[in-house]
Length: 91
Image 1 (tube, one colour):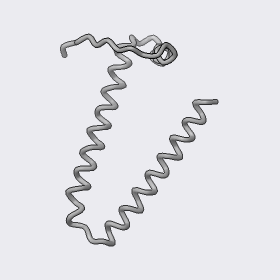
Image 2: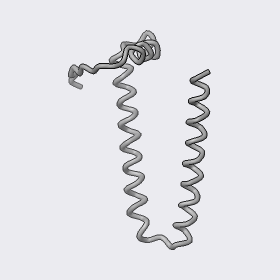
Image 3: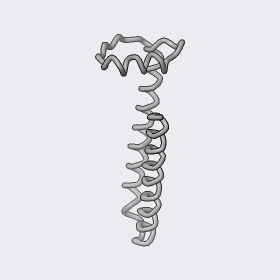
């Protein structure tokens, strides 16, 4: 894989956190891995939403209501987990 240089500016505090998180690993490797994971997550999210949109036309109102409830529960769980993680990070 070809390597290209990218220069970004970060607040000093964030840069220190990145260096600390990378540990002994080169920062560029650590950031590249993080970006790759994030891009894969976004692609997966997009594909998932496309699949849902395509299947909506074939669902009964009852199934649609059940799925809406399920996704609302998942969203609430994610919000709680994010909140707990934020609180743990602050401690």
